[in-house]
Length: 176
Image 1 (cartoon, helix red, strand yellow):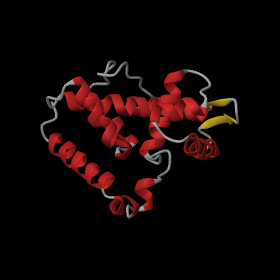
Image 2 (cartoon, rainbow, N blue to C red):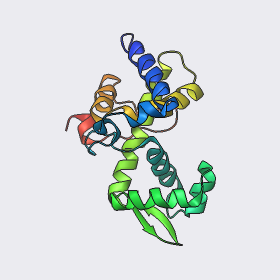
Image 3 (cartoon, helix red, strand yellow):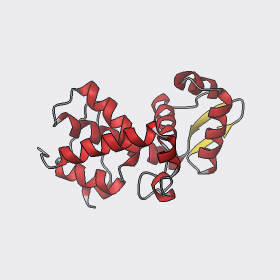
Image 4 (spheres, one colour):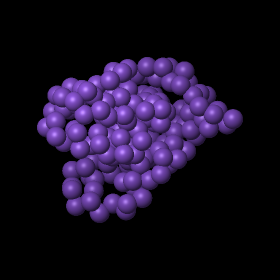
């Protein structure tokens, strides 16, 4: 369905592996790649993306210890990141009570889930199994802009179902 795009995905996968395996490359990325405005869709680090998607999947307040256990990190590390996300207006954090998504966080989480599902679905068109597509999409999704996802969604005919679940659509995707 997207024969010219397979080279892009292979390049993006290789480049993402290079960046994450070499801390010198990651820390030398231009700041606009690591932290861009919300409109671009990739202002959050891959870890923050995973935390937001995890919290979104819990549908309510989540204890920081639960997040720490899920990701195998120290609770103090989670708390530091949670505070940063709360400062950005994405989370509501009450110390010793838990964390939940703010209104802005819910919108962001919807986009993050949609981005993952669109990318995973696109990768299945290149022969990857559902499991492989989901895993590979997770490896590079933080580097794909909202504009690119909207264009891919339109090119794919606004699919309603991805390999990981239902795909929701917003006004920018639908051209409204």
